[in-house]
Image 1 (tube, one colour):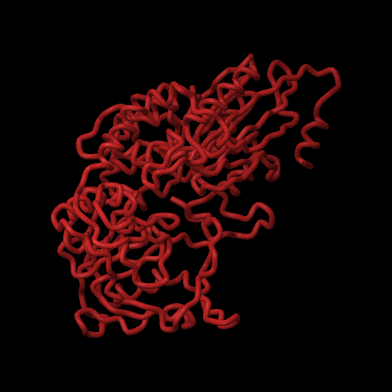
Image 2 (cartoon, rainbow, N blue to C red):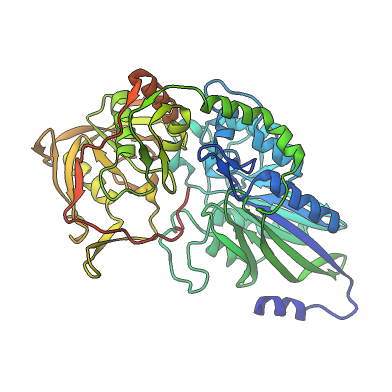
Length: 545
């Protein structure tokens, strides 16, 4: 509020005034329609509902700018089967929906690169709005239509929008997904570009595919400085509005120093709205105040134009998810964070080991929340539930000491035990997302959460023999891990034995067909050292990819 009052105090009575309305989405993850095809139930947000909300605001306001913060085209079966599955090369349903909304610009997120440059290029070329990333160079040579910034005019007001993306894409993606591109420090790029944009525009907006590395209330570091930088960005002079994403947090508009900041959450569930109050400043305009909110989309009627545009892609998903692959002999729960060896994870391990021929397999739970499949016909719906990301498979070679380091990193989130209240309760780091709790197959081991860091993995054995530091093993990991994702040691620099450049989803489908009958089971190859009651409930993490 203090920042707002300071701005208003700069306004002189009788000064000509205007209002600029900025609408912002981020991390929509291909949620074009308000329906979850995997869980087979309605959702609480969609681009179709965003379209209705934005159309209404445009009818009510004369100066409106609509922007997106990235991670738009990946995340649902609708997006995958339309643009990435097999030889799919049809219209991108998310881009088609965004064209109908009438976006003025969008920033590339890391998940835009998941399907490779050919798919990304097609999606960008279909867009009737510019994609921005000022800290990416080499785009012209890679034939990617990416701009650094865009300046739009609304009722005589010049609005500059600078786009920045995470520089960690080379850490999270296989090199073929970004070949020819380089990623500069976004803070340095912003510091260089903002003074120039101030000369060209009345209002400067920065849209960034990154979140806040510090707590907005206390300023305490959240341990995510390697991928989030919005707090530091907000300290730069000259930014009127900083719109953030990547971490999926609901951050209603607020002041951070001299800058207004916001984040709309995820999955098109909210739209950030910021109304900037403007006053005449010479021949131009200046921001003298603001108000804003994050508006839920759940009550909006889906725009029929978007629904119609996505109908063919949705029909393909329905047909694919009805295709029989085999049989499930018993119920299977897909776990969000299992506290013991788990049948759903063991199924992923089995696929990775069979497809790769590796001795060992490393995998983590990728599905948020529990999802149960009854015994009966298996379809690609189960494969997508198990593996919603388009990761491929890589086999690396590690020594025994390196393998132990990897596993200590995998269990770092189990931080202790609470032995009160009628049982032993497992404590975990609430800042660490479930997809960073990997388990190992092909080996046996115990996890002691009460042991010192670096000594929590105990009794590690392969083929019945204790692992020695000088031993060597082949390990199957997904492409995200192989590129260094999650901060796992040694994996990015390990010798690569082979790369299987096909999505895990396809490998799962082929496994189901080849085996015909799937019997959910775990081999109990690992466990905690004491019986446990429950894990500490997590809260949203600042590290969400």
